[in-house]
Amino acid sequence: MPVGLLVEFDAVPKLRRAAKAAGLRAGDVVLAMLELWEWCWRTKLDRLTEVQLLGFMPRKAVGPLEAFGFLESVDGLYRVRGADRYLRIKQAQSDAGKKSVGNLKQNAQQAPAVEEPPPAPKRARASSEQEQYWDILEQLRVEHCVRLGIEPGASKKPKLCNKVMLDAVEAAGILDTVAGGEPFTRWDMLTLLFDRYLAEPFGNEPDREGRPRNPPWPIPLFLSAGVLQRLKQANEAAA
Image (cartoon, rainbow, N blue to C red):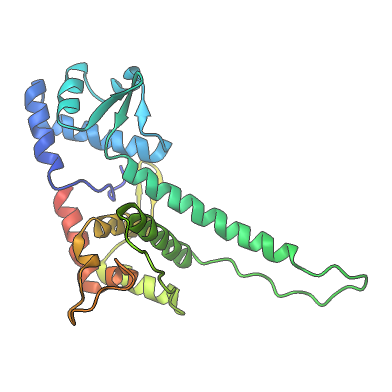
Protein backbone atom coordinates (compact mmCIF):
# COMPACT_ATOMS: atom_id res chain seq x y z
CA MET A 1 0.00 0.00 0.00
CA PRO A 2 1.44 3.41 -0.84
CA VAL A 3 2.68 4.94 2.38
CA GLY A 4 1.75 8.34 1.00
CA LEU A 5 -2.02 7.91 1.36
CA LEU A 6 -3.17 10.82 3.51
CA VAL A 7 -5.72 10.20 6.25
CA GLU A 8 -7.53 13.09 7.88
CA PHE A 9 -6.91 13.51 11.60
CA ASP A 10 -10.51 12.67 12.53
CA ALA A 11 -10.78 9.67 10.19
CA VAL A 12 -9.34 7.04 12.52
CA PRO A 13 -11.62 7.89 15.50
CA LYS A 14 -14.62 7.79 13.16
CA LEU A 15 -13.48 4.44 11.78
CA ARG A 16 -13.18 3.11 15.33
CA ARG A 17 -16.77 4.17 16.02
CA ALA A 18 -17.94 2.58 12.77
CA ALA A 19 -16.13 -0.63 13.71
CA LYS A 20 -17.77 -0.63 17.15
CA ALA A 21 -21.20 -0.13 15.57
CA ALA A 22 -20.52 -3.06 13.22
CA GLY A 23 -19.16 -5.31 15.97
CA LEU A 24 -15.79 -5.56 14.22
CA ARG A 25 -12.20 -4.91 15.27
CA ALA A 26 -11.15 -1.34 14.66
CA GLY A 27 -7.91 -2.42 12.99
CA ASP A 28 -9.79 -4.52 10.45
CA VAL A 29 -12.06 -1.63 9.45
CA VAL A 30 -9.19 0.87 9.26
CA LEU A 31 -7.22 -1.52 7.05
CA ALA A 32 -10.27 -2.13 4.85
CA MET A 33 -10.70 1.59 4.21
CA LEU A 34 -6.99 2.11 3.50
CA GLU A 35 -7.09 -0.74 0.98
CA LEU A 36 -10.25 0.73 -0.53
CA TRP A 37 -8.69 4.19 -0.93
CA GLU A 38 -5.60 2.55 -2.45
CA TRP A 39 -7.83 0.68 -4.91
CA CYS A 40 -9.44 3.98 -5.91
CA TRP A 41 -5.96 5.48 -6.44
CA ARG A 42 -4.82 2.64 -8.68
CA THR A 43 -8.04 2.23 -10.70
CA LYS A 44 -8.83 5.96 -10.88
CA LEU A 45 -12.41 5.16 -9.80
CA ASP A 46 -14.31 6.22 -6.71
CA ARG A 47 -17.45 4.13 -7.25
CA LEU A 48 -17.87 0.38 -7.08
CA THR A 49 -20.58 -2.24 -6.98
CA GLU A 50 -21.75 -3.95 -3.83
CA VAL A 51 -19.96 -7.14 -4.88
CA GLN A 52 -16.70 -5.23 -5.30
CA LEU A 53 -17.20 -3.48 -1.96
CA LEU A 54 -17.71 -6.80 -0.19
CA GLY A 55 -14.29 -7.80 -1.48
CA PHE A 56 -12.86 -5.28 0.97
CA MET A 57 -15.09 -5.67 4.03
CA PRO A 58 -17.91 -7.75 5.52
CA ARG A 59 -21.45 -6.68 4.74
CA LYS A 60 -22.14 -5.58 8.31
CA ALA A 61 -19.46 -2.87 8.02
CA VAL A 62 -21.16 -1.15 5.09
CA GLY A 63 -24.04 0.49 6.98
CA PRO A 64 -21.87 1.95 9.78
CA LEU A 65 -19.34 3.25 7.25
CA GLU A 66 -22.18 4.99 5.43
CA ALA A 67 -23.43 6.44 8.70
CA PHE A 68 -20.00 7.87 9.55
CA GLY A 69 -19.48 9.40 6.10
CA PHE A 70 -17.00 7.02 4.45
CA LEU A 71 -19.40 5.51 1.89
CA GLU A 72 -22.37 6.91 -0.01
CA SER A 73 -25.01 5.08 -2.05
CA VAL A 74 -25.30 6.68 -5.50
CA ASP A 75 -27.38 5.22 -8.34
CA GLY A 76 -26.99 1.63 -7.18
CA LEU A 77 -23.25 1.99 -6.58
CA TYR A 78 -21.13 2.91 -3.58
CA ARG A 79 -19.08 6.08 -3.76
CA VAL A 80 -15.92 6.03 -1.68
CA ARG A 81 -15.86 9.41 -0.01
CA GLY A 82 -12.44 10.99 0.33
CA ALA A 83 -11.15 9.24 -2.78
CA ASP A 84 -11.71 12.32 -4.93
CA ARG A 85 -8.58 13.99 -3.52
CA TYR A 86 -6.43 11.11 -4.79
CA LEU A 87 -8.14 11.09 -8.17
CA ARG A 88 -7.69 14.86 -8.51
CA ILE A 89 -3.96 14.48 -7.91
CA LYS A 90 -3.76 11.53 -10.29
CA GLN A 91 -5.49 13.57 -13.01
CA ALA A 92 -3.11 16.47 -12.46
CA GLN A 93 -0.17 14.10 -12.89
CA SER A 94 -1.67 12.75 -16.11
CA ASP A 95 -2.37 16.23 -17.47
CA ALA A 96 1.19 17.34 -16.76
CA GLY A 97 2.60 14.33 -18.61
CA LYS A 98 0.37 14.95 -21.63
CA LYS A 99 1.31 18.63 -21.66
CA SER A 100 5.00 17.76 -21.70
CA VAL A 101 4.55 15.37 -24.63
CA GLY A 102 2.34 17.90 -26.45
CA ASN A 103 4.99 20.60 -26.15
CA LEU A 104 7.57 18.32 -27.73
CA LYS A 105 5.24 17.49 -30.64
CA GLN A 106 4.38 21.14 -31.18
CA ASN A 107 8.03 22.13 -31.30
CA ALA A 108 8.69 19.38 -33.82
CA GLN A 109 5.80 20.50 -36.04
CA GLN A 110 7.02 24.08 -36.09
CA ALA A 111 10.20 23.22 -37.98
CA PRO A 112 10.20 25.22 -41.27
CA ALA A 113 9.43 23.33 -44.49
CA VAL A 114 11.91 24.41 -47.23
CA GLU A 115 13.22 22.84 -50.36
CA GLU A 116 16.80 22.85 -49.17
CA PRO A 117 17.61 20.88 -46.06
CA PRO A 118 17.52 23.41 -43.24
CA PRO A 119 20.05 23.48 -40.46
CA ALA A 120 19.28 20.86 -37.87
CA PRO A 121 16.87 22.48 -35.36
CA LYS A 122 17.74 22.45 -31.73
CA ARG A 123 16.25 19.42 -30.12
CA ALA A 124 13.35 20.30 -27.84
CA ARG A 125 14.19 19.55 -24.24
CA ALA A 126 11.71 17.43 -22.37
CA SER A 127 10.65 18.71 -18.98
CA SER A 128 12.46 17.05 -16.12
CA GLU A 129 10.54 15.07 -13.54
CA GLN A 130 11.01 17.89 -11.06
CA GLU A 131 9.64 20.46 -13.53
CA GLN A 132 6.63 18.29 -14.33
CA TYR A 133 5.79 17.96 -10.65
CA TRP A 134 6.19 21.71 -10.10
CA ASP A 135 3.53 22.10 -12.84
CA ILE A 136 1.32 19.57 -11.03
CA LEU A 137 1.59 21.53 -7.78
CA GLU A 138 0.73 24.73 -9.63
CA GLN A 139 -2.29 23.13 -11.29
CA LEU A 140 -3.57 21.84 -7.93
CA ARG A 141 -2.98 25.27 -6.36
CA VAL A 142 -4.90 27.11 -9.08
CA GLU A 143 -7.80 24.61 -8.98
CA HIS A 144 -7.99 24.98 -5.20
CA CYS A 145 -8.16 28.79 -5.43
CA VAL A 146 -10.81 28.64 -8.16
CA ARG A 147 -12.99 26.31 -6.05
CA LEU A 148 -12.78 28.83 -3.19
CA GLY A 149 -13.46 31.82 -5.44
CA ILE A 150 -9.99 33.27 -4.79
CA GLU A 151 -7.87 34.91 -7.48
CA PRO A 152 -5.11 32.31 -7.97
CA GLY A 153 -2.44 34.49 -9.53
CA ALA A 154 0.51 32.57 -10.91
CA SER A 155 3.62 30.91 -9.52
CA LYS A 156 6.84 31.63 -11.34
CA LYS A 157 8.83 28.47 -11.91
CA PRO A 158 12.34 28.93 -10.49
CA LYS A 159 15.24 28.94 -12.92
CA LEU A 160 16.93 26.15 -10.94
CA CYS A 161 13.72 24.16 -10.52
CA ASN A 162 15.46 20.78 -10.35
CA LYS A 163 17.71 21.91 -7.52
CA VAL A 164 14.91 23.62 -5.60
CA MET A 165 12.71 20.52 -5.71
CA LEU A 166 15.53 18.09 -4.92
CA ASP A 167 16.78 20.19 -2.00
CA ALA A 168 13.25 20.30 -0.56
CA VAL A 169 12.60 16.54 -0.60
CA GLU A 170 16.09 15.76 0.68
CA ALA A 171 15.78 18.24 3.57
CA ALA A 172 12.45 16.68 4.57
CA GLY A 173 13.73 13.11 4.17
CA ILE A 174 11.16 12.15 1.52
CA LEU A 175 12.22 8.99 -0.31
CA ASP A 176 11.08 6.78 -3.16
CA THR A 177 9.28 3.63 -2.07
CA VAL A 178 7.80 0.51 -3.64
CA ALA A 179 4.41 -0.68 -2.42
CA GLY A 180 2.34 -3.54 -3.76
CA GLY A 181 4.93 -4.06 -6.48
CA GLU A 182 4.44 -0.52 -7.81
CA PRO A 183 6.70 2.51 -7.34
CA PHE A 184 5.50 5.38 -5.17
CA THR A 185 8.01 8.12 -5.79
CA ARG A 186 9.06 10.99 -3.56
CA TRP A 187 7.30 13.27 -6.04
CA ASP A 188 4.04 11.37 -5.51
CA MET A 189 4.49 11.89 -1.76
CA LEU A 190 5.32 15.57 -2.29
CA THR A 191 2.11 15.99 -4.29
CA LEU A 192 0.00 14.39 -1.55
CA LEU A 193 1.64 16.58 1.10
CA PHE A 194 0.81 19.59 -1.06
CA ASP A 195 -2.85 18.57 -0.91
CA ARG A 196 -2.58 18.70 2.91
CA TYR A 197 -0.90 22.11 2.62
CA LEU A 198 -3.82 23.44 0.55
CA ALA A 199 -6.22 22.31 3.28
CA GLU A 200 -4.50 24.58 5.83
CA PRO A 201 -5.52 28.27 5.96
CA PHE A 202 -2.08 29.73 6.68
CA GLY A 203 -1.18 29.49 2.99
CA ASN A 204 -3.61 32.35 2.30
CA GLU A 205 -2.96 34.38 5.46
CA PRO A 206 -0.75 37.50 5.54
CA ASP A 207 2.98 36.87 5.80
CA ARG A 208 5.12 37.96 8.76
CA GLU A 209 5.21 41.53 7.47
CA GLY A 210 1.43 41.62 7.25
CA ARG A 211 1.36 41.53 3.46
CA PRO A 212 -1.18 39.32 1.65
CA ARG A 213 0.38 36.27 0.05
CA ASN A 214 0.68 36.65 -3.70
CA PRO A 215 -0.07 34.14 -5.03
CA PRO A 216 -2.10 32.33 -2.34
CA TRP A 217 -0.60 29.08 -1.05
CA PRO A 218 2.76 29.82 -2.70
CA ILE A 219 4.77 26.78 -3.73
CA PRO A 220 8.07 28.15 -2.31
CA LEU A 221 6.44 28.43 1.14
CA PHE A 222 5.32 24.81 0.89
CA LEU A 223 8.84 23.72 -0.11
CA SER A 224 10.48 25.55 2.78
CA ALA A 225 12.17 23.14 5.19
CA GLY A 226 10.05 24.01 8.22
CA VAL A 227 6.68 23.77 6.48
CA LEU A 228 7.45 20.62 4.51
CA GLN A 229 8.87 18.78 7.51
CA ARG A 230 5.85 19.73 9.62
CA LEU A 231 3.45 18.44 6.96
CA LYS A 232 5.44 15.21 6.66
CA GLN A 233 5.36 14.69 10.42
CA ALA A 234 1.61 15.36 10.51
CA ASN A 235 1.08 12.82 7.75
CA GLU A 236 3.13 10.20 9.58
CA ALA A 237 1.25 10.85 12.83
CA ALA A 238 -2.09 10.43 11.10
CA ALA A 239 -1.12 7.19 9.33
